[in-house]
Image (tube, rainbow, N blue to C red):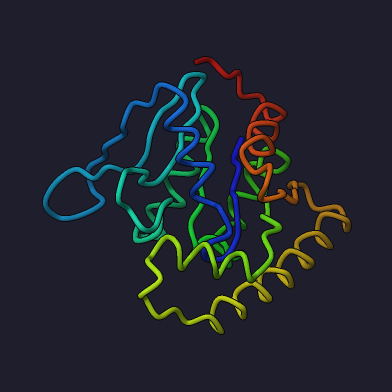
Length: 193
């Protein structure tokens, strides 16, 4: 089962990842081949074969797999989903569709694309809070990305309505953790603390 949580900057994607690794025993996963010099920390393994891909640690300003090479990310999603359950999020994954097509084909209804319903102004406020209010944000870029994600969500919902076999979910920001846990449980993850 794959849960891909999507949203723009400040929507709350990383909050769910931080929750998972801070509330369940998490073993860090390192792999060779992600860079030229040493093994790379690519995620965490939680009980019940849940793999949370990405970086979640104190002081990081972007979570998930942002900054990771996309081909390696999609390879890791598939490999870990074949042996368990995957939670993955990042800003760059939020807008992509084409790289997901092989995963949609392989995993079908075991793939859930979940969109956070965070209002754009809240996204901007949260981004300022995370990066510091002295940072100048490109608010128009956040607004455009938010609007684009809405159109993408509508297109993906239509694909599901037309009979394609993958799942779409809308996740309320205020209940993002509970919603993600429910989606993971519905996908077969047996939570163990």
